[in-house]
Length: 370
Image (cartoon, rainbow, N blue to C red):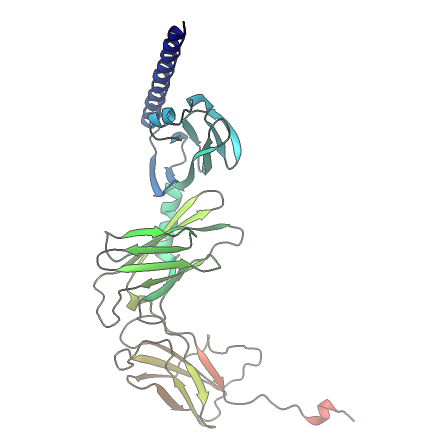
């Protein structure tokens, strides 16, 4: 009798295993049917992060909890016991395959699947990329420069920033920066530091505390060599509503280099002097700067900086010296100086200025009236 019972139990287990395989095959078939009936472009940004491209029409995107059917058997998990959560809230759907409903830009979120006892089996973060909207944004980005990039010198470090409306909340999801197309990028556990490398160049990038600015360094950059290839940087921004926006920019360092402000001082009543920014590349004979000088004859009592609207009255090129001197004209109230690379059509530095005439003294009778 015991032998019959053992054989019967073995037969039941075999039937359950076959049924599990059949159900898994059925779900795989359903997965393929849904994928065929509701075609969507999707790709993996990072492990467990799926990007689904939408065009505004309704559709479905299957998500798989456990990739292989035999993994259910190995873990002794029944298909019907798997339940799903979206952003921590339990969903009605059950089973190894979850059908994500896509409507316009909705559907993104953090999807987790759990076993019967509540244990986490797997998770997928779904980001929605609006193809048409992103195409319009990128067109505007290319025209107006959504990513603003600049470099202080030719040492291989540069930074890029962007501006989001104060009501928007989001963060950097991924960064790709390269000079050639075979670059591989990865992010550390903090999600704040990226490394991109190829056979020819290595980049490292970090997001600053504001979340709206990244700093990158090309570790193998040679400042004395001519740039043969542009830098191509792509920033993937993720909003709080699980939308993905992608922005790109191409440039040479010589196109975005912007010197820091020059240090300016007064020698005597008729002479001023300034020096190259300490952060600028050296030797200065190889990296010369050109200077613009504006002499202001009018007072600007309420101006913190009178230079932005000023017009340069003289331009100097100083190819090989650090200290530059200039004799100002009679009755000049302030002098503004700024610099740029003398050999490239790049950006001017911010203005530096010095006031030559001290503020008027208050007469004593105004302070102590009789």
